[in-house]
Length: 251
Image (cartoon, rainbow, N blue to C red):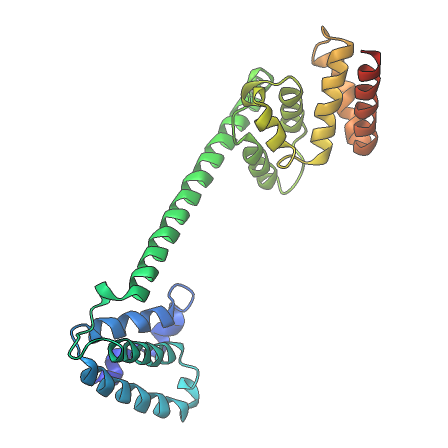
């Protein structure tokens, strides 16, 4: 098999996998495997071959934009420069190549990040399923929130096509106002301000102030707060702020 046929897959196969693979990365890795153990003179000869094929490709329209070929040529040039700066008769070793090792470290970090993202997405989906089950059982209002429930709320909203889940938002507003579950921690309440939508936050603020005015009022008695927030979130927020100032002045 010629060097040229070994380097480049069939056009149909390349097109089918273009979205799944990185041709440039494949080219660089192919060069490194072939260059392993070569000395400077051997790398120089391989570089001349790569330049020859690059000139050939340039004359053919369907190969003129060969990303893998360009990457291979650039990698041969880089390795040639690397060996030129080394002591005579140094052989190329990818394990001693700082560029290669940095890429491997970046790949490992990227893979770990993707794995963490998948685990977090699975956790959010499972919590969203749990909240959905609780609402269907009618026990949601007796459930304490957990860290990450803001993301579970977003997932439920996404599943509903973007429609606001009034019962979920009402539950979160109540638990935030009452400092239940992980909202007992001030830092969690502060973080919620950047994770929850303004109407929900206004609802929670209004509930918190109403709780000071009527400490023994039940959730059902304060249902009007949700209607006020739905009708005019900004006005509900202003009312909550007004009540806060009034309470502060009275004390």
